[in-house]
Image (cartoon, rainbow, N blue to C red; front, side, top):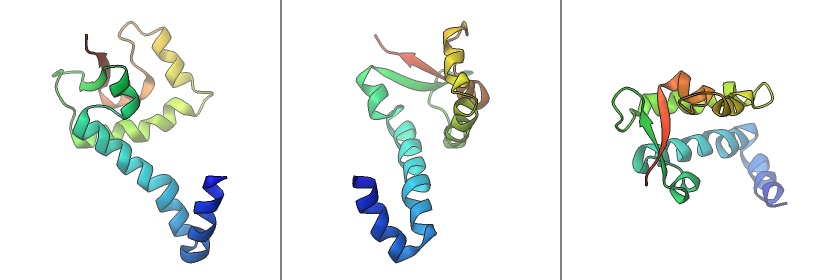
Length: 108
């Protein structure tokens, strides 16, 4: 319901551009910002998980994180099989992590 309350006036005021900004661009910027600033989104922080560069083990570059976000589509498209890949991969990387050269690790 909240989506319609927000999106309705947004579409009326800005046309489709507002919808694209609100539902596609803003979440992408917020997610990549959290990954870059905190190493994780709030959900991952709750589980003491963070995203690292596979090669260095350090903080991934902003470009690598943006690629990771775009690669989520590849993970989600065929019935979320890119996420299911985690169960059989020995390094526990999803498809988007393999594409971007990132990995999720858990702090103890």
